[in-house]
Length: 222
Image (cartoon, rainbow, N blue to C red; front, side, top):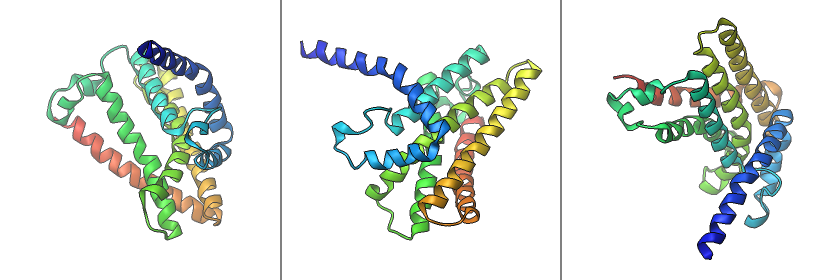
C-alpha cells in the first residue's frame, strides 16, 4: 500500500506538470523580473510551502531542456550526432538520457555564472547558502532562453530555408531577450545603472559561453 501510495503521488506530480509548466513559462516569459523576485521570496517559506503555484526553478529548467530535446528529435528525425559519435568523450553520451544530462550541465552554467557574478559584484563571500537564492532565480530566467534557443537551433538543421531563417531569428531573439532580462535584473538587484547592469550581464554570459563551448568541443572532437 505504501508503494501504491507513492506511485499515486508520483503520478499526480508528473501530471500536474502539464498545468504548471505552461503557467511557469508564461510568467517567466512575460515578466521575468517578477518571476525571479518570486523565487527569492519563496525560498524564505517552509519547504512544503515553496513554489506551490508554479514549478520550482531547477525542475522548470530540467523540463525545458527535456522539451527542447524532444523537439530536436522530432525535427531532426534521427539520432543526435553526439550520440551517434563514439570517439573521444562523446563515447560517454550513448543515449538520450546522457545527452539530456550534458545539456543540463551546459545550460546550468548560465544561472551559475550569473548568480556568482551578482555575489562578486556585491563583494560578499561566496558560500553555498548565499549562492542558492540567486541561482534559483536565474534558473527561471534561463529556462525560456534554453527552450527557445534549442528550438531555434533545431530548426536551423532542417532542409527548409524558411525554417532555417525562422530558427536563426528565434535563436537571436532568445539571446537578446535573455540579456535584456539579465541587464534589468542586475540593475535592480545591485541597485546600479543600466550600463553597469548590462556589463555585468555580458561578463557572466561570456564566462558561461566560454566554459560551455570548451566542454562542448571536448564532446565533438574525435
